[in-house]
Structure formats: structure tokens, C-alpha cells
Image (cartoon, helix red, strand yellow):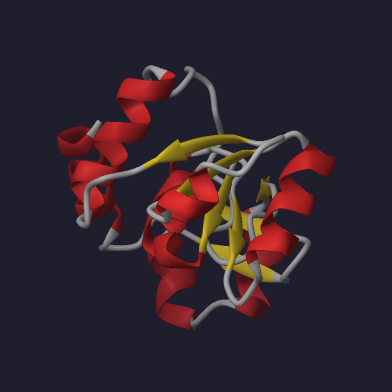
Length: 145
């Protein structure tokens, strides 16, 4: 998928669910169309004019809020396939599980002592762990999806 500039928050959440989602922040419509065509991506947009462009698959979203947008995507595409692994919410890179010891020097000491599982994004060099906010994220995803 390719989310236009109006849908950054949606792109972030789609990545957490595991969808390969490019975020087109600061791109022109021409750049969005060219990239969508080149990569065979579905364009997610709230822009009626962009959604009518020829030669791209698009999903015009009506909702202004995240919950409504996720519901529209779910209705159009169906539920997310089982087994999708979360992607980096920042850059869309593939997250891979890393050994706890690999994270030791890269996370705060409290985090290292408290958490057992870590994921790493080789694209943007970030490390993620299921922090205290993760329960809130999971609850929100269950509610939204």
C-alpha cells in the first residue's frame, strides 16, 4: 500500500499490523502515481482527484479518524492475513527478532532488565520491545480490527 500525506497515522498503524505500507509525506501526486505504478501498490487517499487518476488502484477513504480509516481498509481488503509480522512503524522496514544480548548496549538498562524480547530494523537501525504501551496498542488494534 501507499498512503498519501494525509494518512501518516494510518500508515504507522498499518505497519504495526504488518502491512507493507509506504508513506508519501511531501510527495506530489505525480510522484505518488509513479511509485504506485512502479511497485504495484494500492494508493490510500482522502483526495478525490488523486483517487480518480488513471492507471493506479486506489482506495478513497471517507473517514477523518484513524478508527474509521482502519475499518474502511478492513472492509475493502478483508481482515489482515494471519502471520503478518509487525513492520517498523517509522520506516516500514522488516523487523527481525534479535537475541536479548544483542540489544543490551542499545537500550536503556531498565528496559534490558525488564524485557526479554527485542526486534531490530536494519533499515533505520531502531530497536523495539513490547514496552508498557504495547498493551494499549494491542487493545486498540483488537478494538479497531
